[in-house]
Length: 321
Image (cartoon, rainbow, N blue to C red; front, side):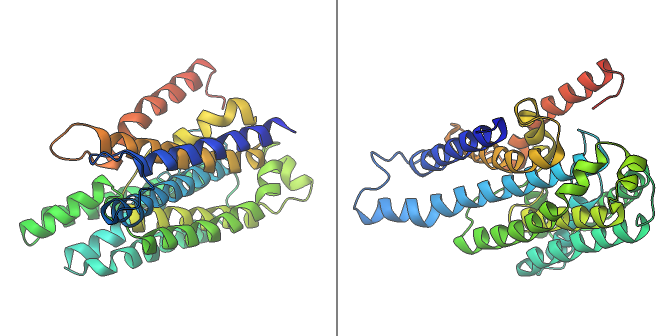
């Protein structure tokens, strides 16, 4: 069994253990999560299971999209936020919330994520090198961030402002199995596109010119990765709001064991992202605080130092990935 297969099996086991712990742990202590009484069944199957599944699927989507974009851009600091996909997904949800149509927030997130992906793909179709894609993404992300700030500033009432702030902080609290199904369906769609680009990502490790010389279709690879990442990031944002850093941290956590081949890194990164976010959600649920810490805040507290560590290591190596 290869190191990647062993790592993936270990991460599957860790994910199952964390999902089991998520059913058991929480502010309401349970002697045994599968007890026969109605209250325990309701807590486990109607509250904790949908929440844990949603957290895992959102984390897996962010981890997978991060690994794919890092392979495409050949930069271990890349994630869906770099290309503006997360920012535009958040913008779509914020617009729906600002106009008082919260039910359309998930649809808005998806539509705007794919709009950003279409813009990046169209403008960067003939780009040579990842710099053009990054510049396009930075512009889109800044534009989305400005519009989100404008929506927060012009929120018509305190209730709308509270909804907008909660969305931008990220959470999987009170999610349902329908939310988990939405995240899972979009993760499956995004993963299909990304894994179709796996050979192109492998070729890109040789550089743009060498990859083209051996017959890799770089434009197709870019389109598949960007659209796949949009499906993953859009689905994650649609059900959980804005959760950052998981796309950066998850691939970094497994890269030393999975290797630097982008194709081999995809599955372990998804599994690591899912485990990471379930673990973070368990932590925010068991914290003895009057108000539950938002999951996006917890992810930032974990992912921020990891991001800084990666940047420091890159600087020490002279900017090499």
